[in-house]
Image 1 (tube, rainbow, N blue to C red):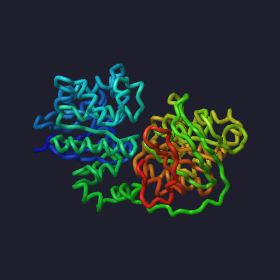
Image 2 (cartoon, rainbow, N blue to C red):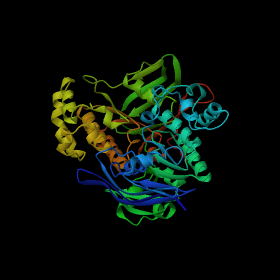
Image 3 (cartoon, rainbow, N blue to C red):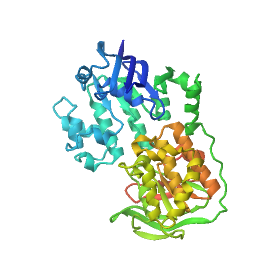
Amino acid sequence: MKSLVVENLTIATEGRAIVDNVTLSVSSGEILAILGETGSGKSLVASAIMGLIPRGVSVSGRIVVNGRSLDAADRDGLRSLWSKDLFLLPQEPLNALAPLLRADAQVAEQIRGRRPRAEACAALSAMQVDPHHHRKRPFELSGGMAQRVMAAIASVTRAGIILADEPTKGLDVDRRHVVAGVFDTLRTSGRAILLITHDIALVRALADQVAFLDERRIVENGPAARVLASPSTDYARRYVASDPSCWPARPYRRSYTGKTVEAERLRIGIDDTVLADELTFHCHAGHITALLGRSGIGKTTLGRTLLGLTRPLGGTIRRPQAEGRSALQKLHQDPTRVFSPWQAVGRSLEDMRYLAGGEGALRQMPALMQRFGLRDDVLGRRPHQISGGEAQRLALARILALKPRMLIADEPTSRLDPPVQEQVIRHLRAIADIDELAVLLITHDLDLAHAIADRRMLLEAQDTGPARLRDVTRSPQAPTA
């Protein structure tokens, strides 16, 4: 018997369908993964099942939950099934957690037993949330930590159907494996899981069935092993091929270009807490250096220290000299947040004129936008009205207009689906090759590092001491990050 059935689901606004006639089903003890690009409607399917489509948006179709049939437009009926039948693990956990409730209390709410707090703490520890974070409120947690709190809640929920929307976004490899293990355990216990993700590795490891959603419709579905190994549609083939694990590894080449940044016996940390020490390395013009390492070990702090945003605790850094402050630039993880949310992105670009050389930079923007395949009408929209790929390419164009000598890219594609990620990464590689820009790529994605980087460095710690750097460029296998 199917635990969850969605029949002919259509979601429309102002006469335009944004999800069109979607039909899918998932049985107890089974994982169905939905893959598709941003804007294809994946998250809207989960919202409709939970009765979360806002008023004013038309919904039609039928949703069957554990044999109970409801009209897809019956928001109140679907919401009455929360916790006992349906549980949603949302894409933005910080927005879903109760803002004033501690992490352990949020997990304990789902537990019926004599010792709910002890069981909650055990669930959090299983998600690799340290005990000193158990009593923190959401605003005190990082996005990745909040994601693990939500995964802990999912691990103890009584609901038989779990909808998981990008559950591994922003997590490093080790913690993605932990979350994957939780879903495997939930499946074994008989839960039906609808997994919405762009993490193809997670789908390969977990999914029993897979469905590709493109342009509002399911274009291909079937057993995950068969569909991923031999997709029958052009869209699914392009999607699978865009995963970095399918790209050839970049061969090692000795560096002959000039050194852009050099660090010697660098010590980094936050306040007086040392995160990493004895860091000696350099980055070459025209080369991409991948910086690997688990979450919280100091990768982002190292990037901020090189940028001059965080004070080094010791050692020396030699940076390139340039007029103004444009010699080193940063490409952020969330591209939509680098532009003001209250105005069109074109208006945000106008602020460059207040920088040294800003007028000249503005004059270069049309040509750079053309180079990155951006249409002029993007400039008239606000950040939430453009895709993540468009925002990241626009951020790259703005950076290049300032003529930096080095770019620090901190997880620049972790929030992008594979086809858009490939597009951005190919642009990043071209920037290094054509513009001779040095790039420090901070990433959790080992396949991406092997495919695109000229050099790979692993930031790792032994026991409780500060982290150290290890060059793993010539390692035959990917290091654990």
